[in-house]
Image (cartoon, rainbow, N blue to C red; front, side, top):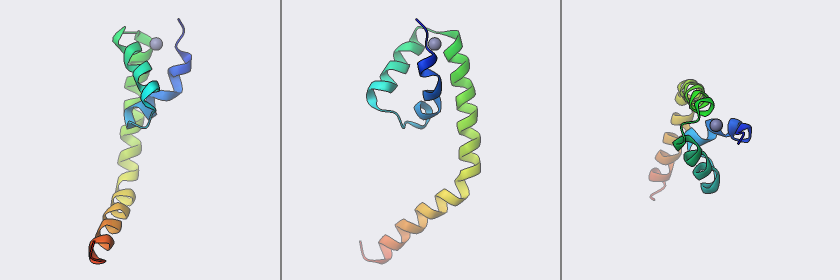
Length: 75
Ligand SMILES: [Zn+2]
């Protein structure tokens, strides 16, 4: 069975952003040790890692700021 349909899901899979059904599909497929997908997963992990690295300062500060504001408003 081809697994090209999974190809664009790996970044999202790593981010935990997939629907349960999709992420289950990927997990089951990876358990069969498909070499294509294991490679693809490694690639996606790198991509996500760099994206997070690049995005982190801004995103984290935003989040922290939001939480801080909530606390200040007496939540
Ligand atoms: Zn595969």
